[in-house]
Image 1 (cartoon, rainbow, N blue to C red):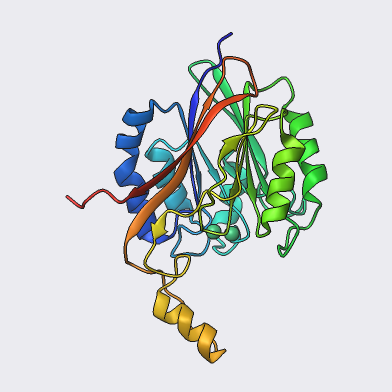
Image 2 (image 1 turned 45 degrees about the horizontal axis):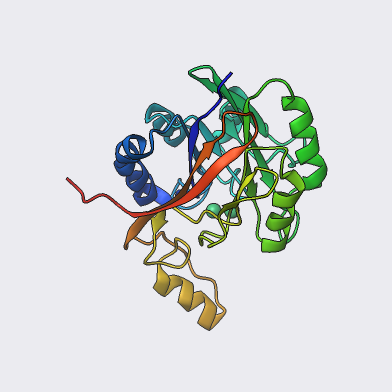
Length: 266
Ligand SMILES: [Fe+2]
Ligand SMILES: [Fe+2]
C-alpha cells in the first residue's frame, strides 16, 4: 500500500494569541501543503500554562488530529480527567504511570495510520521515567498498528534531542523537538530515513521572551525578584514543520520548516 502522506507539526502554541495565529493560518497551510495530518503541541495554550478541556476541544474542532503536551501538562486541574478520557491528547509517555493521561495514540486518515508519541527529556526536566527506554516501549506497542510514527521529544537539552533523533533513525518517520520555543536550523532527513529537527519553535508572540512579556522577563532576570508573568501580545508567528513521507512505511521524504507571521486580522 502507498502510505505517502504529509504531516504538519506545530510548535508549542502560546496563549490565546498563539491559538488565533494557528487557527488563522491553518486553512492556508492545509491548501499549500496538501496536509493530511495536523499535530500540535498545546502545552502553553492556556495563557502560557497548560491546556483546558475547552481549548483542547477547540483545537480538535479546527481539525487538529493530535495534541501533544510537555512539562506544563498539569497546570490546569480541569484537564486531568480529559487526558484519561480522550485518546488523541498526549502527555509525555515517560511520566509516571499513575499520572493522568497516556503517551501515544494512533489516528487514521484515508487509510493511512499515524502513530504519535509524546516524550519528555530527562536532562533539566522532571519526567519520572527514562526517556530512551520509554521510546522503545512505545514503538513496541505500536508495532504493526501504524504506517508512520511521529515522535514529539519535549526536552531542554539539544544533546538529548539529537541523541533521540539518532536513536530512532530508521525506526520512526519523524522526531521533532519542542520546549525551547526557539526554532533550530538543523531540519533534515537522517540517513536511516527519519525526519529530524532539534526544536520546531513556538506558535505565539515573537515580541516577548519565549512567550512572556519581555519587560517582565527582563525584570525578573535583572532584579532576581519574583515577577508575575503574562503572555506577550506582540508579533505573533507560527513555527512548525511539514513532513512528507515516502510510499514505504516509517520513512520521511522531506522535512520543511514553516515560519510564518500571523495572518492579518479580518
Ligand atoms: Fe512550551
Ligand atoms: Fe515545555
